[in-house]
Image 1 (cartoon, rainbow, N blue to C red):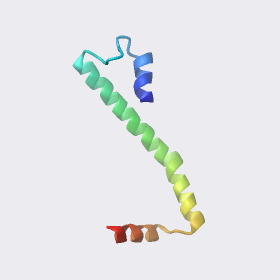
Image 2: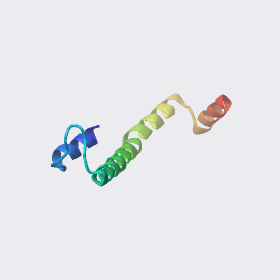
Image 3: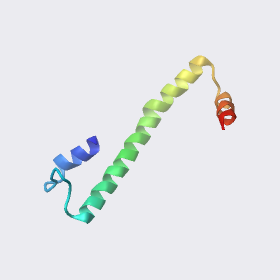
Image 4: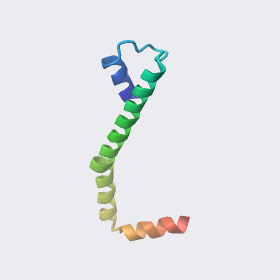
Length: 75
């Protein structure tokens, strides 16, 4: 939602509360929002979430093989 609001307020002058009236402009903006959101999620995973999870697993002494074995047991 933050990405949509930034685009609406900073870059799109004819954006109204109910949305856009031009279908192709909506498609373009939706694609930009989707790509930006995926990029933010990827950066968040690689720089924040994954290192934290690795640190917690290392502190508890849980190996990657043990995690895979546990998840395969659940399947």
